[in-house]
Picture 1 (cartoon, helix red, strand yellow):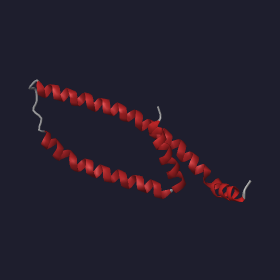
Picture 2 (cartoon, one colour):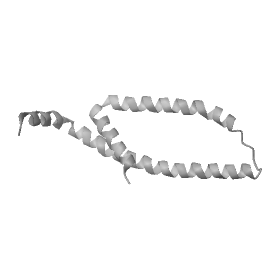
Picture 3 (cartoon, one colour):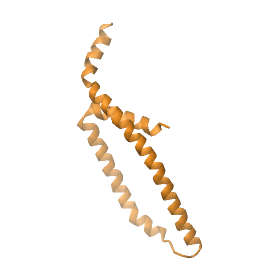
Picture 4 (cartoon, helix red, strand yellow):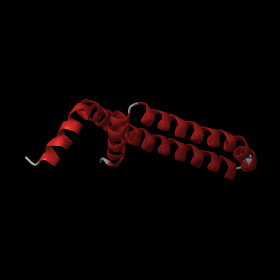
Length: 111
């Protein structure tokens, strides 16, 4: 075996437990997020359709500008918090986080 390959293997060998555990957990999390995301999208879509039908029938009046004003700050803060949380995970344990994120993306793409 060439010395370059041997030195690379020696450097990666101690990281394999963290990489493999992170990859397994990341794939599982990505797969679960994908499934739950589809279910959530279906429920939100059906709820929106029901609200629109009730508005069309004159059963309720919607003020979408007020809904947007109420939800916009919450969504902005949630996105920033999610970004900080993800960055904190990646900085805590780099081999685990790297394997987790890579496999999370694979889990999101899995059928």
